[in-house]
Image (tube, rainbow, N blue to C red; front, side):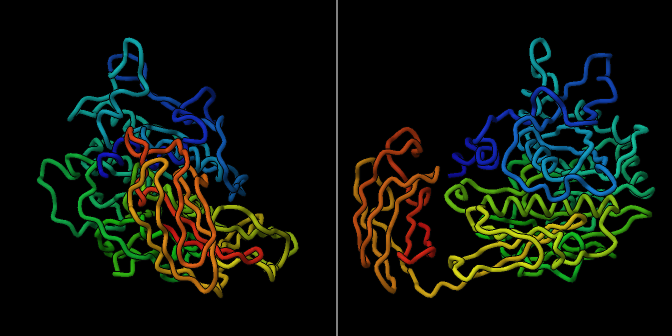
Length: 469
């Protein structure tokens, strides 16, 4: 399974699959974006590519336009997950400066430079060239409101000049958002794992995340970054976080059920520093390939909204007060787990009486702020103990499905692209024959039950209960 995950890389496939894998690196850069103020040492051109909004994916413009104008942000996306910075720019007004640094040396080497320069960006064990690009930006005269920086290779991989410039910028008022931040003395989070050898402060293979923890998150206190995001509803069966502790003087905003901080903030001089401790893939949280069979798109939307609020707070651009959420000027939407808006309006939220059972999200959006809250509609009927035999089936094979429910239910076999390839109604037991699907395991025409799902629903008007397998 690990080999399959490394080949297909779920994070990239899910969000670029609708368009092109390279859509983030296209023809026209984002407005005011700077992709290189300096030149490569030796006078050659700088090997970097702009990020664009040419390919648009579904999104909510949470703060676009942003009151006061765009945030001037230095972002360090990975090559593999560079789309994340575009997703943020779709939702928040940004003037971007970018330096692309991937955790994997080979992703850095074989991208963004072609022709006679092919492979010139990095070598195994030597990424000094691309880190020199980051030094050029940090030591430049450009003013940044905030800096978004994953420390995939650790603090010491930054040049000495970069580290000094970053600390100076923060103390003078620039915001800093760190991801996987544990080796930085600026960070509000500290690792509880044994320290690495003196020669390095990050694992030799960043693809190997090391020890992880997994448990539900909860918000602590009332803070601008977190008050608007229902983090308690995130899909924790897929999300992991690093073992860590809060640094002295840091304020923890999100912690796990086990008490591990996941998000914390601190002040350094005149600047705000924010640290995220979720298991990451570049800037993004890491979402495993198994999540492709589940309803996770809506959680990605709120994850991006969380990052947007972190950048706004880091830049000291949050509103002075909360709006009147019942004002006639406030837009509201109720969205289901499929990320579809089922009802919307203005002013005070009006929940429909016939809203389908299950989890929904109420989005309220004013000119200066927004908030999202979870809305759980009870399911009066029950579906339990769904079992499938056999667990692996070939195309054309028949699977036996058994379950317990309060009344007859409809069972559907759904492939990894969400297409129904078999369905039947019954009372506790049905047999489903696997029809044709374009998504298969390996080269053979078979499916692993854990990769697909059986969806069950009770036939009631506008209501459904779902069980996944």
